[in-house]
Image 1 (cartoon, helix red, strand yellow):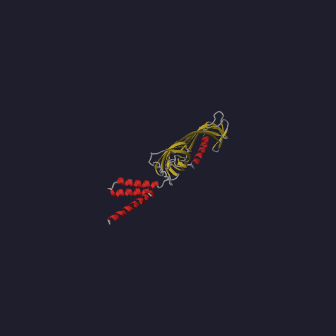
Image 2 (cartoon, one colour):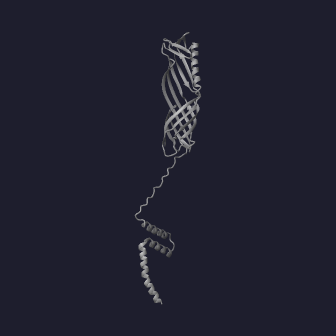
Image 3 (cartoon, rainbow, N blue to C red):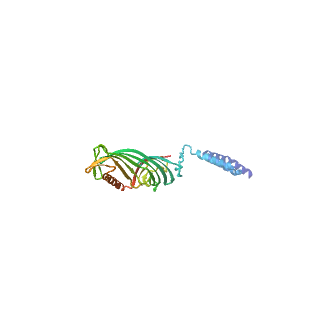
Length: 299
């Protein structure tokens, strides 16, 4: 009986080896997995051995995908937004406005708030003639301002309350050609040839420190990666009405005779009436209009 069993085993053993060899030729990675599993069960657990089994498995799987190219997308670069802490980042800008030519610095205070401060200056002359009187004017614009820029919608539109320190003044030298007629108030005069009329004029604002309110578009500190911006603003500063002072000297004649402006009461009354009319007109404008266009760079 035992001899018969041995004979059957000897007959079936070569057949089993042939089937295993054929399976290995068709699926070599399965045999690697089988060998790995057999080793795992026949020996104590070892982390390195488990890793090697996975490596064999992965190697086998990759070999079955020969001829294919897998495109791996590049990792997405996340740009960090600029720092919103005060004075960690700044912007510098230049501008032209009705306060002169200016420069300013700005720094963020929060996501929707900037602190901005700048200076303006300009000096120029502009001669003109009114009612026969020549005015050689010189305008001196000097000011500084500090504003809090608020962006209510998070976009470029901003509301900017602030403080303006202004020392804008104007002065002029007055003159009348000898023998020429000119008018002051309701009176018409003829200038003297020997003692022609001349004088001076000043123009000033009653307050140097005044509140300011601006509206505009453009953020000098963009919250993205941009560096350049073109801010546009318009607004007013409450300066109070400006006043004009005029002083004249010299001799002029009218239908009632000749007199010196420095001593003649009638001439002085005509001059005061003219100045009063001008100052009454200026009382209608208690604010200083501001229009501004600039360019800024965010560091």
